[in-house]
Image (spheres, rainbow, N blue to C red):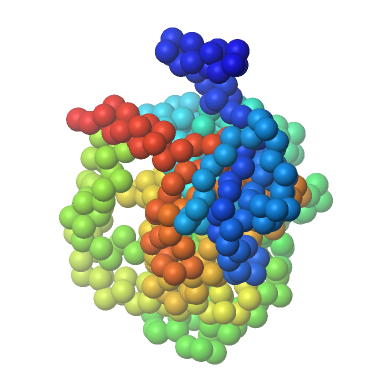
Length: 436
């Protein structure tokens, strides 16, 4: 009773924090658990959470609930692992978009982990605040500031930066365009020596095959693949697709497709401007996105057939990767032009399905595959004892329709329960704050 009164007093005085609201244990009861590893659904399960871990999963008769557990009724609902955004961005201290709002938007849409792909000042502190439960945020794994032609000055500088970023505690490296072959090799050699993964774009002087041979962990946007297989200007063939699959499997490299981002280039600006989630974006940023996309669409109007061919080839490439057993990782490059954090991942899943990926494979790419990628960091992306308690409670089965991923009843991130009522309230506050 004393703790309940304390939380109440903190709430009415405006002092309540996410950590203060956290419970020691929760229990989801009578819920259908989605086992992403197998694609199996198990009805009438109890899932017990202790602190930030899943403690037990099974029929009610097999799981003993502590008296202190907060019970969440899962009858008629589905419990799945939280999603991972494998190509996200986190605002730094100089951003006009408050970082805590961006991080909450991710969580509101079931994203419980983000691989940040562009390091900047203040992000490491945000990562630590999130881990301590001081803010409502996904778990963050952060790439260091980008290593590209604009900020690397020769192989010696490349080696020095990799060493510096490792010392500072970044989780991975991001390689970008503009690197010379010598600079790229310097980055790769030091990173491989110290065990720091690197991923990102494919520089023109490096080329896809060399990047794969040097151990680049992920290729973002399926960058350079169509060039490598000779399908830049013609419809891709089955033989070319097989070549792409084989070389990627041999390298053990993961692919982050970000299809929805590129589909915007062939979409009329008025359609993009009507996205409902833009109400959660600062007005100045939305205006900038609109101006950007209108200008690009007008400039590229004569190239729409080429854009359509590129998109169709990318879709076929993704389908071939998925069916061929390549590691596909869910990512949307948010925040980005018309890619609102969290919401854009749902658009990406729809694009992946339209490309021919199976729903189970899409969901796997954002849960089990992401957890396997970060297996040296923690256990998540699955519902089993010992795994991090990152969960999404849904009102409908996502295996039946990928759009059911939007039917969120609540999100648990590191054992902290964020209910739909709280999500709706907070989204309303963000919308109000950003109104022109």
